Structures are given as structure tokens and as C-alpha cells.
Image (tube, rainbow, N blue to C red; front, top):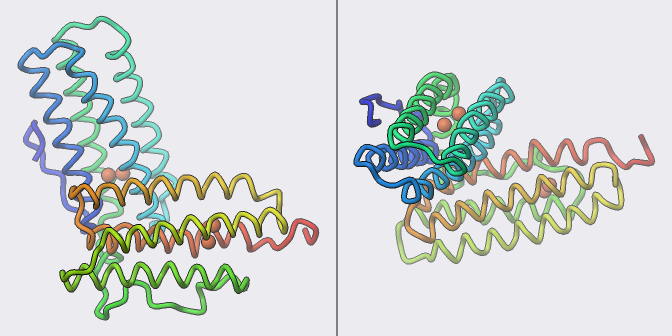
Amino acid sequence: MTTDGHTVPRTGNGFIDVTHAALMDRVGTIRRACARGAPRDAVVPHFDAFVDEMHAHFDHEEVIIRAAGFQRWEEHANQHAMLQQQLVRLVDYVRECEVTGDFLCTVAGTLDAALCRHEIRHDGEYAALVRTASATPEGRELIPWETGFELGIAPLDAQHRQLADCLNELHRASLDQGEADVAALLEQMHDHAQAHFAMEEGVLRSVAPSRFVAHRAHHQALNAQFARVRQAVESGRLDAGVAARDFLRFWLMDHLLGSDRVAFAGGSDTRQ
Ligand SMILES: [Fe+2]
Ligand SMILES: [Fe+2]
Ligand SMILES: [Fe+2]
Ligand SMILES: [Fe+2]
């Protein structure tokens, strides 16, 4: 429930729903602080945190909807970019200019209304598809390995399979709610992912240098997404099962069937 009484519908993906709720909480904090006349210097850090959380949310949501097969994900990403540009400009103005308390309240209300409008209207467009894709599988594996995932480059395929194994182990640990150290499993998966990215970049640099820089930048974004989710689990703000089932599953599928296909499908530069 927002401060204006709107209800943001659940999308059926626990990770998205948790981050929607956290963003609305942040907006609520800002609106209450502005309403009680808090000085600008006290409110600006909350505005900055809002911008950082919004950016991360849009980034993560785009991974999920792309991997879930939402055909209009690029249109949705454009909506994110426009909203981000609009709201960042407002927050920059608040940070850099002497503004009145009334103006702060107006900006806070604008953040609330613009974000709600997006989550209710635009996020609703992918909700049915994402809800289906986010269903918990019947077995104990989130990603049962398929030969269709393979690129045909044995060392990379072995590492991709190892990442899927790590994720499945994390999922099982969250189902069992036992003694398994989910933080250690997350750390292990993160280490494997970083080693994998380094190796993959080495292969790509030698076979297709024209695609190397863009793919390395993509890996850096993937690494930042993983690090942020890992930190949220380790600090107790995010359930490990939700992280595995509703974000990392999509993160890995997007890597396996999306960006790596594009990077390696064209073969070597010399064969083009
Ligand atoms: Fe969203
Ligand atoms: Fe969105
Ligand atoms: Fe890659
Ligand atoms: Fe890869």
C-alpha cells in the first residue's frame, strides 16, 4: 500500500514483489520526512538511496522479464529509462538547489505517483507471464541441465553446468531450511561466476575480439547484480530461497540462453 492509498499488485515473482515493497517503503519514508518539515540535508540521502534502489530494481527486473520470455522487454526497458531520467533530474535539482519544504513535498509526491503508475500499469503487462515462469518446479532442481544450454565449447559448457549445480544446491538448501550455510553457497557460486567470466572473456578475446569489449561490460553488469543480491541475503534483507528461485534462476538463464548465445553464435572473427 502506498502513501496515497494505491495498492501495487503482486507480480507473482517474489524478488520483484519484495523490491517493489522496499521502494514504496523508501518513498513513504521520504514523504513522511517532507511532511513533518525535515530539512533538505536530512532528506537528500533518502532521495539518493531511492535513486540507487530504483536503478537496481529496474536492472534486475529487466533480467527477469527478458529471461521469462516477455517479448516487449525492450519497450519496458525504455519505459524504465524514461522514468529514471525524469526522476533523477528531479532528485538532482533537490540536491543542488535551495528549495522550499513545499517543493520537497511536491517532489516526494511526484516520485510516489510516477513509480506507482509504472508498477501498476506497465509492470502489470508482464505479470501473468512472469508469474508462470516463477512457479517453483516440482523436483529439487531449479535448472535441470539440458544439452540445449550448451554452446559447444566444452570448458565453458562445463562451467555453465557447474553454475547451474551451485544454484540447484542453493535452492535445495533453502527448501530444507537446515543447517546448510546459504551464505557459503552464495559465495561459492559468486566465485565460480567470476572465474567463469574471466575464462569466457579470454576465449572470446582470442576467437572474436570484436565482441570482447561489449561482452566484458555485460559480465561486469552481471557481477554487480549478483553482488547486490548476495549482499541483500547476507544482511538478512532478502530470503535466500527467493534470491535463488526468483532472481538467480533468471539471471543464469539470461546468461546461458541470451548474452552468451549472441557472443559466441557468430563464431570467430576470421570466419565472418
Ligand atoms: Fe517494477
Ligand atoms: Fe518495470
Ligand atoms: Fe558470458
Ligand atoms: Fe557464460
